[in-house]
Image (cartoon, rainbow, N blue to C red; front, side):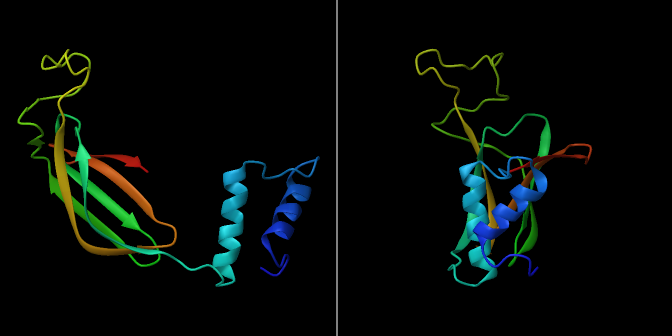
Length: 147
């Protein structure tokens, strides 16, 4: 917005305005993100573009009718919904996941997995991507899990 010309100036400015010791942003990943953001603003950082065709959800929670996925970024604002019809992996079908599951395999020390594949077509993603996964109940209400 014209106050600072680079990420270091912005971090210093923020630190001086928001804290008494001048250390506003101390977490390395957050400082790194500020530099990435500055590069994006100045158009000096090459954005990587990825194409997402589908993704897989392993061991979907029991009692839900569908997986709903929202994807938002600079190139897409899409919603996908897939019925939960889990496919057993290694030929083992389970009805629910958790410590009370009667099909727990003691020898492998893990639960058999189910998988639901969500088809996304050919979505182009670049820059900041916000993905929210929800599970639609059989009554139609949603439970959202932001990632």
